[in-house]
Image 1 (cartoon, rainbow, N blue to C red):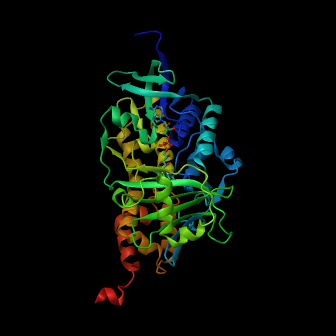
Image 2: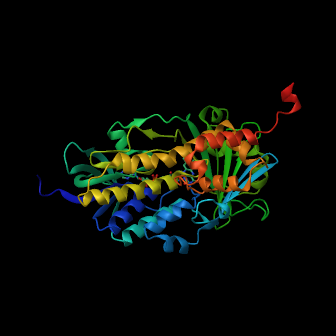
Image 3: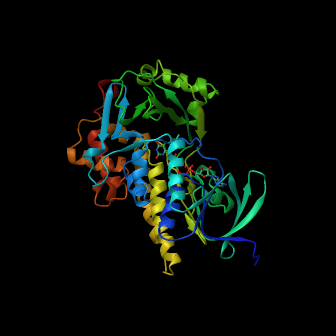
Length: 419
Ligand code: FAD
């Protein structure tokens, strides 16, 4: 074997939330960690609303004091708006014991903070280095990298975590991708200076509003600490085809159609690029294989509506780091039973809620006054990210409970509909 080849315990592809949390968790257990990141940080990524469960993983990775000190916008729940109807969840009411508030974070700053914290704990991060090939036909596995000058190098690793987000490096290289069971949806989004009146909405909550004529078209407002907000609209790609192909024009056309968004942002300053992302729902045949495991979006991405992406990403990092540590210590581990199956449990709970959002069942529940306080708290816990808490009946028996509740909450048909 070539003695020039660099050898590491763990190589992590990508320094987003899943990569940085996994890096810190492995380093804290005493392993040598190298993170390879294609971009220079800070860099833009969409997805700024954290769930409270995220803070458990940030804490586990020893990063909570730094996140608390960063001055991010406090968040205590989510508000839902459909024409004159309003519903909200307040994380202080949640069923599962845990954090009762969290943050709304510009990702450029948040992801850089997590990466810097992982570095402070001793993980090495190389920016502007892209992983371009992977060979796991023998152990140790071999990762081929390319730097900004186009120079290639090979690194040997005992194990690789793919935390490359939507780039999905290993799923593509290893032919692991499989279609998501969600239709192809898209989003158009930007950051704005909102100039909204103080009472326009609750800045401590993410705001989700529904298009007045299309229940599967929705908007978000994620307020930041500095009078800026992340705003966007999500819909099917066919729906977006009816609007301008220019993102900046399209988002304004869409905002004009929803009275709450139109009014709230009538004086907004659109000073940032308007971007779009399409076909984001993604899945894989397997989340692990010889010498590797997939974390975060590289494994599965459902939908942005319940802000579950970063929570799932961090949960995957936490589960994978625990299994890999035991494997490195010579214990016999079962990646399917200890990593993929438990991860999928919570992902599948979120998946059910995403389905229920788009087919209208969740909206019926959220806008109904017919919800007992105990049930409110159980649903609140899931929206706070505690989708793995089997003591919550809405997790343990998710499908049946959700369905029954939706039937109870469904509005009676109007006279027009009965005729
Ligand atoms: P990422 O954060 O994407 O990080 C991946 C990193 O890998 C990047 O820095 C990238 O540069 C690097 N990389 C890629 N390819 C390579 C390579 N070949 N070599 C080396 N490095 C590489 N989630 C929420 O929790 N809350 C939200 O409000 C929310 N809103 C969303 C809105 C939209 C419209 C969308 C599409 C998603 C949203 N999400 C949200 C999802 C969330 O952004 C992601 O789930 C989250 O970023 C996943 O983190 P990650 O660590 O898997 O990947």
